[in-house]
Length: 424
Image (cartoon, rainbow, N blue to C red; front, top):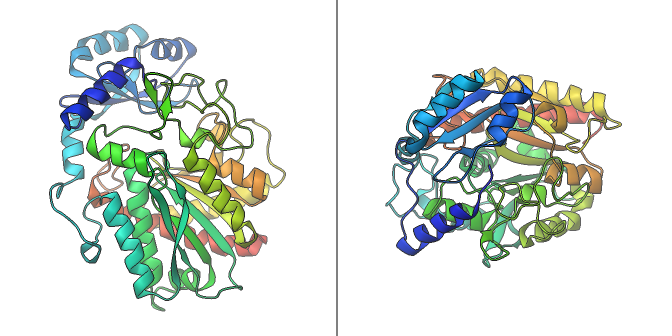
């Protein structure tokens, strides 16, 4: 979505009033973009919190996108649908009602000992819980992956039961602030790795025989902002120019970084603003430095996002295949089949450019470029597999566990096939 100066004014007003922006009667429609005329019409819409907002920017014909329509524009949108003969589905009838379901215990304080997966926790509670794991399990070490613009720490855990022997997997989650289910599912997976028994042989195997570096909440400032002020904020919180804030942290990594052009924006107020230069953001710069510091221990890099139900591999900036394309496709096919087997959630997979859309400056592409290890981006489920209800980024907490279960199944398969193919 393109966030204009009007968005900044609204967000500042919300900050002053200490009240979150409300989405009452905002509707979310899913649009199947069928031709270039429809694509151009959608690109030409005025965007911002009192106007239209794209959850996924329209970039190519054949793409499926979600658009947020405020109540003031319901009639205008209906006219656009008729004029352009758009194929639409009403995905979310009232966005605020879905947001309200997301935090059933909004005003309850949580301590680490009460940590669970029936709600989305504060930054402080998540960090306290990570430290509590270090106290409980000798194989757990809290690790500091960097700092944020507002001075917070980026914390994760290293889980390693066989130091010096296990191959390593790095996981980063919630680099896009609004994708809450990524950090919640990641903490569920951390807990399961630590508590699995021999009765769960696949999970027990990867818990014992993989050196895990897991950061459940990378965009700490942005996540805090989504809780306090604007639920759909995506970027970091750095100052950009006079009126804009934030950089898309998953367009800011080195290695085929690009400001503007395909996959990113050079407009400072845009949701996909790539920054003034690669690693301009302290979050991406310091986290990348940490990754490089443990590079000799890493075999695979994973980035957790939502909500397109995909696993993506390099490249995002070109349609050219990587040299190891066939092996990585075989690996992803095996991984996705395992994910689907649990709850029936259907995923697609393949190179980023052709599977979802062109991107530049992403963390998983950087990992492949800089480290020479497979780098994959997960896009978690955006709907309830059982009921079919769409929720996009605003996943009700009852979706945390089923999502995490199927993702953990896929990690078991990923490790198994990676061993066969020589990646681990």
